Length: 501
Image (cartoon, rainbow, N blue to C red):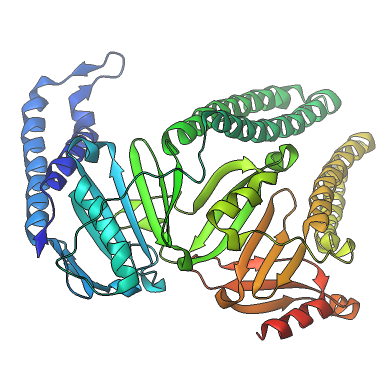
């Protein structure tokens, strides 16, 4: 069994250096820095800190060496084997034909030592949070293993005399250009700004009522201070969100490319952490096209994949962008992009519309105004007992009613968008669902990945012949449901019979 590359030790020891220093200062912070008015350094503590750091780093070094000595991998005739671990040993064996996803990851520290991490996943629901096989090797060897495992997954048998074929650069089927990244940043910032403005209006209304109408000067002073702190925090959040979006666009999605190799799809991206995720087309279980409110207004979208064996946690490393196929594009260009990458998953035009609008808002308005009415009566009674004037009571109750109207208006807009969006299309074994209010989602999947269809309804809706179908997909996601609100029950029954569910 071949051992992992020694670069694994050096790369992790460099990471451990920073971890040990952070741990050291966290423990010795109070003893090293003393004094309240004037902070001084306690020099007598430094030798103890150095000794403690030597012990901590020696433990890290011992662990890395033991991990290197006890870990390794092997490609046999029909399966790949891997063992790793020190205190808790893990031995994994995976048949080539059961491989679902093969992913490569290379951080900035890995690049310094010329190594990369290769993870191989079976797609089992029991191990959806991590990959079965994790290998630390030289970057070129990982590329060769990627190519060889793709071939072995199709053939199932390894020919020891065969040559390793390195992956070659191909024209990307989609590129995330700098212009698109700035648009992506602007749209995200617009969404953040909208939330800030709405919150500011609500806070301004509260201040006006408490400070001007109720004449509660003492209370109003503290309220204005609190609102100022909240406004400052929101502004700071907006600035952080802006830089976070820029970093995500230009660093996280650096050199984003999608390439095809035979029956395999490869998605690569990242500057500080370079990810190369590979899987075959038959592992794809669905495609989701989503649009946030601002994306809907300006006609943009994000395309994500549902793939078994393509989880968010890979090995010992987190990767939150694994499901992204197209980070950002014009909505009208989705069909064109998918025709190059996944032509089988181009969405079907919507064949149904929601038959009525009222059920989209009925339950929400009933619950909301029951709460508003009850609270208004209780509040009016309490103010009357406390001797508050009728005018002030009327202002307070009116403010509560105004808040209820504002919430109702927002929910009404959300429900109207959902009413106009929702629908289903079925063509042979292919199903496309449309749903969502402020956030629109189009999901494309096939009958063979459909576990069940559930009808959610009420006695009144059953009488009216309407229901909300829920499609349960076969994926390893925590939630694998696709719900389409308020559809014609008779039409759904016809589709169920056609799909033989």
